[in-house]
Length: 419
Image: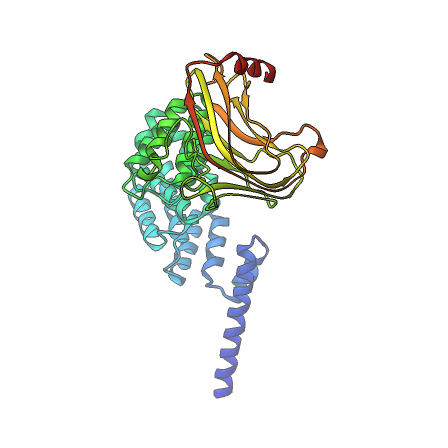
């Protein structure tokens, strides 16, 4: 008797193991594994479910029977319930179908695949608001699902009549929102859509708007030709201590970190560059800006700030120290328009070799049109390839821009020569 029981147990374990093996193949897309699953375990829930799906079009009654067996074999599985709900809906048994879908939702509230199926069900039922709630859950649970459905959410935002569907979901601050917002700032068909989404973001009962979101919003405003609005958006995100560094040029004393946002200093990383504020002898204030080159061999333009200067005449001043900058061409500050003209407005002297702290300046004029914003950038001064190689360091401090009454004759001659 013990041998018989042991043999039965061994057979049961073997059959269950083989059924599980073929079930994995079935889930992976091997349609031929279905027969093997049901051969080794006739009441396997996945096998019964797949068999029901195959016969549903030809024999609804048989499909319902198989689905009932599948659910009995595993009452925690929501898929048989959703399949029965779909068949009930075709038969006009809407209330029964709705009840089954709600039970499936309770069984798998965060399963992205199940939530997508539930979203599709309610969409077919004409309940777009409920469908969107379940789609939002699926997007939050699976990044891939989130990325795939970003265009769907954007279409809701772009159509004013559909926005009431989006707002309740958005105000819950779902996990997918930051990625969607960045996507929308790049892909939205007009600026008003992005403004609407930012206003919606401000209404969310969650943490403060992230720097990444702010930057994406400002970049879209700048791209669409609203520099003053972008500047105000950037200004509103600044901390009180940062606002103390405001001027026609922001953070010219480099007392704050380089933020890489809005109208602050922006840098591009490079393994042969080190650009950051540090304490050094002779500088003004607590920090100065260090720009260190480590056998840099490209054209340098990796440090810049966008400006919002009104038409008129100005002077840029600053101090610099050059610590053995070995280069044939050197570097210089260059100011140019970012509008239609992209014309050069002015340049500083060239920095190379070795020099103690000293003042430098240049005058420039912003034209009346075609120069809505400006680009101040530290760049390679050389024109030829052999002039671009740089090794060594230099420091800057106390950069300022001040408005002037006008350009004198020499400054105007320099400006004409540079253009």
